[in-house]
Image (tube, rainbow, N blue to C red):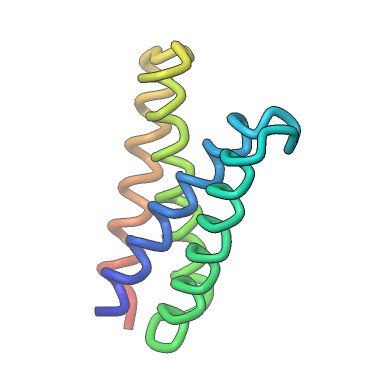
Length: 105
């Protein structure tokens, strides 16, 4: 269950990371509210996951999910580059997350 909670926390990290762009410097009310709520949810769920997952592992997985999700969102919706090296880097992050999950005790 802790890994599922950590995954959801990572998804909320994607929401707030992308949401920051939509706040336009924290000048847009609703995007700012959604971003702040996603931040709170993400940190809260991360704290729950930390009860059963080692801190370093949980933090690395949480940021990895956030990084991958944010990069993919940028590629799909902001027309950011999707060149081979970026894709390879994303795959390396995924393999790192998988490795940490496999090695977690």
